[in-house]
Length: 474
Image (tube, rainbow, N blue to C red; front, top):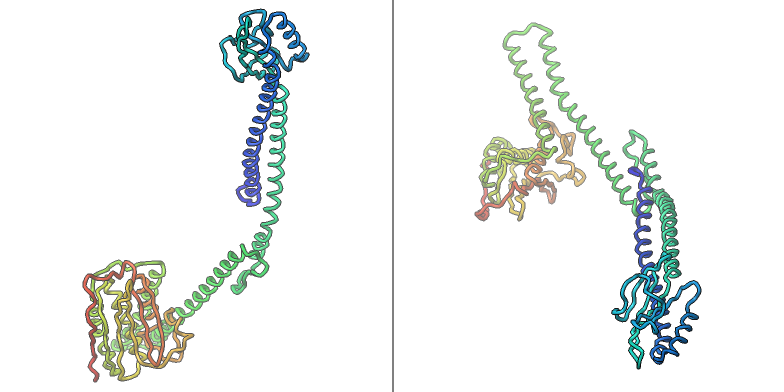
């Protein structure tokens, strides 16, 4: 039963029937029992209502003997109904001693049960006190009724209920199992469809058109998982190709330069130049590997841990000063707007902002101004870098933070930039609980990231007034 939903449902249906039938059966049995007891009591009351006036009316011993003979005639041969008159005077007594051996001479009116020897069922009795009249003393008139026919009806009814409940439970279990298997037919078809998806074809999806509404959500979710897996595989394949491409160039240079150097004898100066060139290629490869390891750690959920309370304006100013030579080379100026104090990893903030500024310097229009905006957005600190330049198509904006992605493959690739800068920005934002964004409007391209969650708590001091840093244009 562990692996079968249909069997589980069948058993659950059976248990439900047992519960409902048991409650109904107990209720019906109790109701029938009350009815049968009521019938016995009514019959006893009826017999008393007929005989009590007669017993109360006469007191002479002569008439009393005749009355007792009539009681003999009213007693059936099977003694289903019996009569007793309990009194100290034997002339008025009838029926002999009570079968249960108890003293009934002091009992008051009411119903009771007595055990009759030779009978399996008790006899229900009703005692009524007949007041004294003349020379006749006070009497206790008892009418007894055998309960066997009534209890047999109750027992037969109980046995019938048990039989019906047992048969119903079995039938409902079997029928519930069949219904469950029939109802789970679409699940089996969906399973067969999923198993029939050909391996290697990542574009195959489940057909949700013929599925019931309850399974469509599951199938849509499964198709969504397939789509995400396809995207991940495509991204992985592209990533592997890009890594191979990025590492192939420096490896090819290293191999070619070394082969040329070994083809002829070289003096010390030439060998030093060769080693220096090889060192540059190795440093390039090392930078790629380090950046990839950093991105891998961020994708595994690694968080920023070396947090400190800093002014974003002051840290941004330090980053701009570090990149001053690049700004001077393209006659660019930088304006820093806004300020706030947050808890961040200062080293990672410098790295991400430097990558955004380097990207802006690379593509900004000459002699233009790059704007660094520091905005307090409630639970987030938003950092953005804007520059005037060629507009970026919207189809590229959502991919610019992917590893090795370039909107224009025709652009020259510098040895210092291998397509991981914006990916590192996204990793830094993720490690601080934030996100990245990019937009291109009216000739201005803006890239940025946010810092939030535990890593970006508002400081006690309010944000300082907007300040600006201007890089001197040469």
